[in-house]
Amino acid sequence: MGFVRGLKCRECGREYSVDPIYVCEFCFGPLEVVYDYDGIKGVLTREKILSRPQNLWRYRELLPIDGEPTCGLNSGFTPLVRADKLGAYLGMKNLYIKDDTVTHPTLSFKDRVVAVALSKAREFGFDTVACASTGNLAHSVSAHGASGGFKRFIFIPSTLEKSKIIASLVYEPNLIAVDGNYDDVNRLCSEVANKYKWAFVNINIRPFYAEGSKTQGYEIVEQLGWHTPDAVVVPSASGSLLTKIWKSFKEMKEVGLVNDVNTKVFSAQATGCSPIVAAIKAGVDVIKPVKPNTIAKSLAIGNPADGYYATQVVKESGGFGADVSDSEIIDAIKLLARTEGIFGETAGGVTLASAIQLIESGHIDRDAVTVLCITGNGLKTKEAIAGHTGEPYHINPNMKSFEEALAKINTK
Amino acid sequence: MPVKVKIPVPLQRLTGGKEEVEGNPGTVISLIQSLDQKYPGLAERISEGGKLRRFVNIYVNEEDVRFKNNEETQVMDGDEVSIVPAIAGGI
Image 1 (tube, helix red, strand yellow):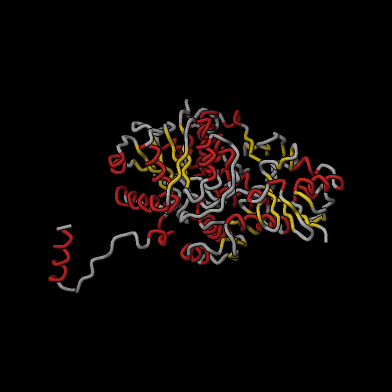
Image 2: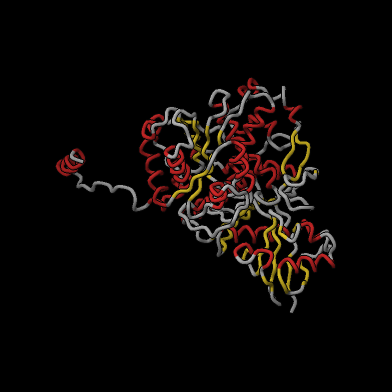
């Protein structure tokens, strides 16, 4: 039933059959799934999508599995929140939040990619799944892997926030904390993946895994009434999500689900780790790796694998990039919470703070239908804003004490 | 003591399945070119016109050569060189 035709090198175009491989043997370029779009056209209609359950598999013809999906049957289809209060504050008339803080089951958009990766790993016959992670992916592989009955090896940088470590351990994976940053963990994992025949979701399963990100784009379009937005602001670590959202819009046009794609794509990074935005601003497509130094740990990838393609998408779509300081990130997390009641993780702060810069600089029009991708839940990175919130009013358990506090609150 | 070079899976077909091979000290690019004598095809897979390809990461003693002197980075006797394809992850 699948519509996958094979894998193809994004650099030199060489084609491969569907296997757990991820780089071209000839030029080391990344492999990408190729679909039979002509076959999908007419089969995947708006009516068919609307008739299916509200999860990411409603777009299954555009996802790289052959049989029935087996993981993430409740993942995806997160709310697209019309952000009128935040919009009014920023002077934006059509602002939306794609709220992946509530993705099932681990509260980040990684549940999308892992749903696809583990469904594919099962088709390949793997019994062990693994990943290198800055946190969110670790949670998702731990959780989806538990419910899917896989053995799990999770590699994380040992400097991760304590709360993120606990949120993996609860699912009882084999958690390996590596003394080093995310790039060090990745390098080690690629060596481990050489030796052990496991499904490393972001290594040998990567071409399939990465396709799961497209579902965020499909949902945005469906939730906007089958229209692509004018602008989308996407947090960028490897640059993968940004390129996949763009791909999702173009695919929807290709298979006839939308008529036009006129979206400008914007990349959001933390100044302490902004190799993609630096290249965009400099107008070059060579990514110079950096040593990350930011509170936005889920974006702290100094050596972004899809950075080059992200710069190309930004250029092709007429978008731009912005990078923001740690204090701007914290302010934006609080702004999103107090205007829209959404507590995003640090990457969410990066997205909103970058959007503010892009609006103020005129890169995003104030009338534009604009979507901010908030990709993970703030409860995972509480440490980042500790000390930057208000304090509770401490009172004694009597009315007098309460009314003294109330008087203080009312004079604020 | 020669330079130890770790070979990733996609290149092991060229090295007869070997995960680790030995090379001569010099610059990274000269090391790659000398390995190509022994394992023909290896240089063109990971470099083009004397430059590393975009999706190839090379580490000398765990340090990315792009933080050093790129393909001109010096490799000494006893150093360990890893050739690693770029890896996805993060957002």
